[in-house]
Amino acid sequence: AEEEDAALAARMQALLARVFGHARFRGPQAEIVAHVARGGDALVLMPTGGGKSLCYQLPALLREGVGVVISPLIALMEDQVAALRENGVAAAALHSGVAPEAAEAIERAAREGRLKLLYCAPERLQTRRFLELLDVLAAQGAIALFAIDEAHCVWQWGHDFRPDYLHLAMLPARYPEVPRIALTATADAAAREEIAARLALHEARRFVTSFDRPNLFYAAERKRGDGRAQLLAFLRRQPPEGGGIVYCLSRGKTEKLARWLNERGIPALPYHAGLTHEVRERHQRRFLAEDGLVMTATIAFGMGIDKPDVRFVAHLDLPRSLEGYYQETGRAGRDGEPAQAYLLWDGEDAAWHRQLIETSDMLPEQKEMAHRRLDALVDMVAGTGCRRQAILAYFGETIGPCGRCDRCLAPVRPWEATDAARKALSTVYRTGQRYGAAHLIDVLRGHASEAVVRRGHDRVSTYGLGVDLPAETWQAVFGELLLRGHLSIDFERHRALVLTPRARPLLRGEETFALALPRTAAKGSARGAGM
Ligand code: ADP
Ligand code: ZN
Image 1 (cartoon, rainbow, N blue to C red):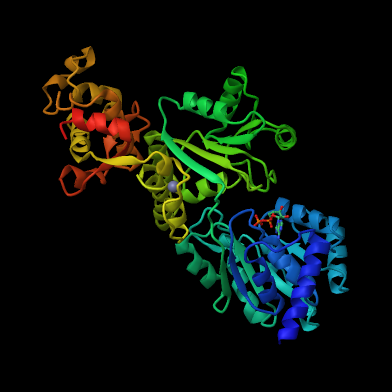
Image 2 (tube, rainbow, N blue to C red; image 1 turned 90 degrees about the vertical axis):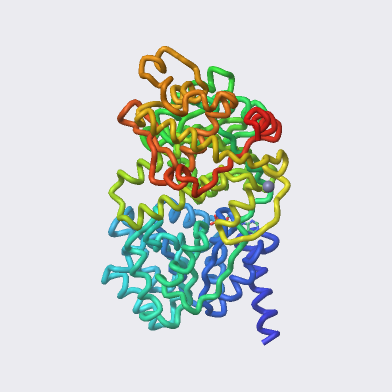
């Protein structure tokens, strides 16, 4: 057995160099390749850019027959096939974009044993024709393996759910001799069990790579105003040759922001799904080719973009989940050099996401899942601890404080703000849940503005109760109450702040509320508040 191991290791090493041009395996790749090459099932959890493709491509080359790869995206399949052919591997893809004659030629090549890798869309595995082809191959022992790429598509509560993936559970019954390897970058700890169960990967060995991206520096800040000034300051701190991505929530915003940045001497291009194919192509090509370009983009940008030297990913709006945030920031620093992940957030962004979830046509369970994914991000943003610790905890990893995020480098002291939060909520309630933060802060600080007096708000019981805190501190309090969902915004009615069920325990004194203030500010506020 030892001799066999050595022979396999030598073949693996030779193919790694000859076909893929890499000197050594990365992380757990060698273990995974050897395990699958020997016929074992595997569930691989590895962050984007970790090198998943090689984990099924190499075993396919080592085994008899063709490796069948199930992949959800035509563009990804085509990229992979092109790269493999470039390296002299006989590869092809079958999907809805392939003409019938071409598909026939591919099927013939497979039957005649002239293919080493065959990519296909999940729906294929439900067509008689394709299953017959697989049956013929299986009977000859000519299927090297099944690779299930982007395996989280089988997870019903995720946003990439593809019903066709559920049918992949039939593979072990129909082709018991063929090893299976499922791969994903996006499974949080809770989703893993479900993916394994749904794909019937009961015996599969699990390979979990750390999701840590040690060269990424994480920072998050509450927006002041629309956040543009903070973004500009951030961009000006970056080395001029370093390009990056600024994610925005709306298409219109990407275009306005690109214009605004160009006017300030920062070359920027917008990218979103509403632009024509040509414009998108052109902008993407320039982003890949030029130094120091900023792409202002919606999340339509990024999937499958292979630019290793993206120096920063900034968010001008709060993303909708921790997982999305991790994926998007993961596009920075693929070359291993230091890179920045800079998030600007606003309580309104969170309120907006929550409203979108509530008014969507998702099933109740899906809504609950979407809320949980957003709350995980909110906890990271609002938390006073290490950012990396919070992110990795979500993926089931435990680490100490990283020493390389904004929280580690400039620690904040949690400010016990229960009293302030209750005054704020009670002012919202007593003024009829019809006003924005500016007016409510006037009431709290006892500012007898014309509007306050006209509405009789100088007579509500919380009038002037917050005079000891500066307006900015009150803004922070309202911002955090929105972020964490104690307040929401009535977007139809003058964006008034309204209470949510989450406000109740806090108002009743059953819950406490702490928020992060920078050390210096916290001291000032605490003294001002008489705490
Ligand atoms: P994933 O699918 O996990 O996002 P890929 O398989 O696309 O990652 O690999 C990401 C990048 O890493 C590719 O450019 C690939 O060539 C490179 N890569 C993969 N394995 C190795 C290795 N052992 N050594 C060097 N580079 C590698
Ligand atoms: Zn840290």
